[in-house]
Length: 239
Image (cartoon, rainbow, N blue to C red; front, side):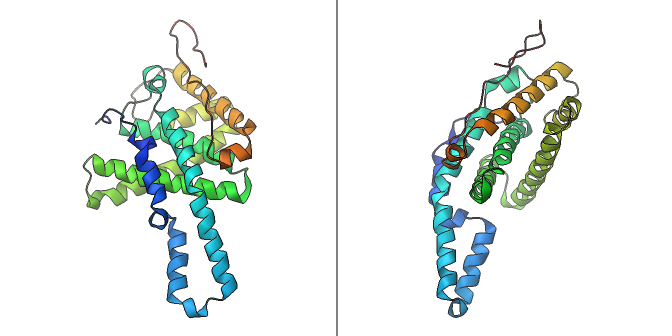
């Protein structure tokens, strides 16, 4: 089934409201720390409480940057050129693949931004899957099936992160095969030129992100370039 027409919700108020709700969207390990603190409060010294509260304040302070990064990921992933020019399937899985691809780029760059960058990557990841959960529920999937689907998509994301990371560190054939195996997995046939053009785009964006400053990314600002347009009369162009 194809997605319903995109109405901007993924990158709009719903994402901001999820961040603004605070601790109910904090990562699981943060909930565990809080539960541990409350259960053994008498045994937690003042210094330990200060460390925990500092962590909570820092996480809350990162909610806005996480929203900014995720909104940019979704906006770029929705560009019609991916689906019209490069033949990415315009389906639920196809759109997930584009979000996963751009999330990979951002997570990979944040890996080089130190501990704060890794924390922001985790918050953006959590926001992404909270939004996926919400989207699946809006499509009518009930509670019984949500958990399994979200876990499956999470495994898919981790697999893609590993495959694309390997591809960027290898020759073009490895990256093209990773994209064929993941983005185009449901396609019976797709032109090699289009997969190669998507590989060029992925490599170009990874390099462009490397040039963006830590300060910009940690404040929630990320810029993507133009999506390649395929011309059947040529080998395609990356704008």
